[in-house]
Image 1 (cartoon, rainbow, N blue to C red):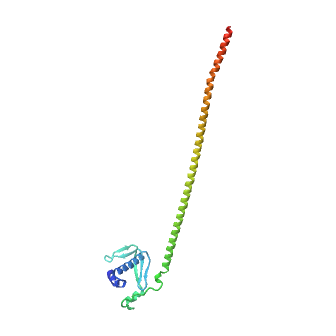
Image 2 (cartoon, rainbow, N blue to C red):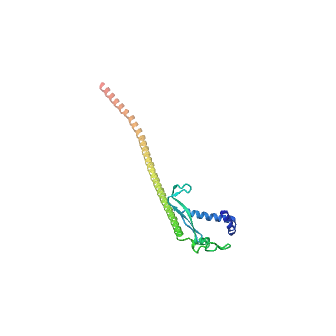
Length: 218
């Protein structure tokens, strides 16, 4: 029986050929993936699939008899269950019709064993740890952003204050320069007037000298 014949054999029981093909594909894919990952797939009454590691060894070529070194490898292994063995050996009779050939799974076995629960708990713990780490990282980023924003605001305030001080100093300097210029303008005309009055004193001195000279002549 090949895969197509297996699908035809269960098509009527699962509601059609397409549904049967999908069911077979899903079951086989799940078994293969689990065994490749190193898990053991056990079906009660049918058997178990598992991965077995084979160490490096020497073997003989059956055609030439030459000794050949075989590398370390891993192979899949299937071990038939006791119910399957009993049916094949004939110690038990195969049920007729549509009855189940192997025993049904006991109650509670489909909910997962201790290993499954431990794996689930470990996965949950990892997920919780990842969430906590993500929250801490987000909190750190928020604090850093807040500090950076505060530092920028403080720097901006200091810069604005320094600019205001510079502007005030410049205004004061300009006002002082304006006052000096105005004072200089007021002082300049007075000096000019004083300079003009000086020649008058010289003229009076000359007239006095001339009068004295005339008097002497007389």
